[in-house]
Amino acid sequence: MSYSAEAGFYRLEVLLKSHAISGGEIEYTLMNQANINQQRGGIIHPKIARIYLRVSTDEQDLRRQERIVEDARAAGCYVAAVYREKASGARPDRPELMRMISDLQPGELVIAEKMDRISRLPLGEADRLVQTIRQRGARLAVPGLIDLSEVLAEAEGVTRVVLEAMQEMLLRLSLQMAREDYEDRRERQKQGIEQAKASGRYRGRKPNTGLHARIIALREHGNSISETARLAGCSISHVKRICKNNSLNHMQFIE
Image: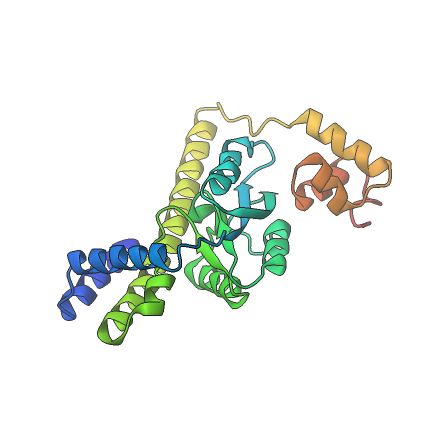
């Protein structure tokens, strides 16, 4: 059964009504938990964060997302590492994402600008990705995604059951909305290309000649594919493609 964002909102409303729990009661629970956390011993322990920045193509710039790093520090987080990626969120095998997950320690936060920076995968694959992060003992800290983990630690009975269900529904809604946005963008792009071709205006994407020259120079100086991608600020697949297109076939598979 497909899981749409609209269906998710409807299920959340039914869940709350079935247990006779209002939004006001949930809000009160959240505020009460925040007050408890502030009063515990008067000691605030800094959270350790790992920040994931991603854009989809090599031509896009990550600098707009860099403010997240300072925002995290301003919020009292210790930033253990920043992971910068130029790859589609619809790919599960992103090297920097995999490196971040491997580095995660229990209790750490994964911070991203939006959920679609973490994943634009189909819901099943996105669920598995999030579970992998959770299995490392880490939590997602993404705008628009409410984290109820601290509230759940204090909740009991029906309230706990409802809050757990709410947490999962909100997560799945966020993941599904990211995927639906990706699919909508792809469809609009396809329609735009078809219209441009029909009118004879389509010329394709212009090559980034400066980036291409840098990749070739790095490879000719003996840098591995992954090291070249890191130094050039692009994806591994892009490095391989440039090697292939520039008669460096003997180098495209050499690490």
